[in-house]
Length: 96
Image 1 (cartoon, rainbow, N blue to C red):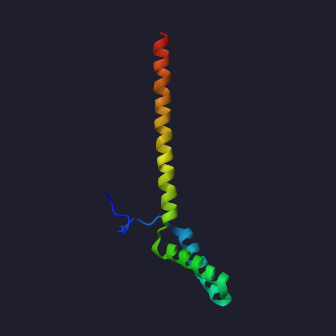
Image 2 (image 1 turned 90 degrees about the vertical axis):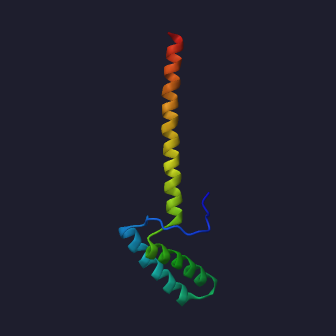
Image 3 (image 1 turned 180 degrees about the horizontal axis):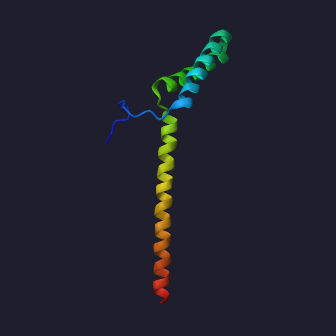
């Protein structure tokens, strides 16, 4: 069993323009948040910090989770297709 509290070194899943946009957007939001102040400014700081961290590390846990979930759904779809074909073959064999 793996410990989810232990950080793992995973390969980056944010590349190229997406990473550059995170860096630029994060820095912009941090600057806006500092100038604005108050609760909205704090919110801009937080979102900007998340974007900046995403751009610096090249990793996005949300994107990784969605990609893993998509891969699992694709695998389930393939297994269902195989099961459906097998069921059709069994139905045809039973008729014969």
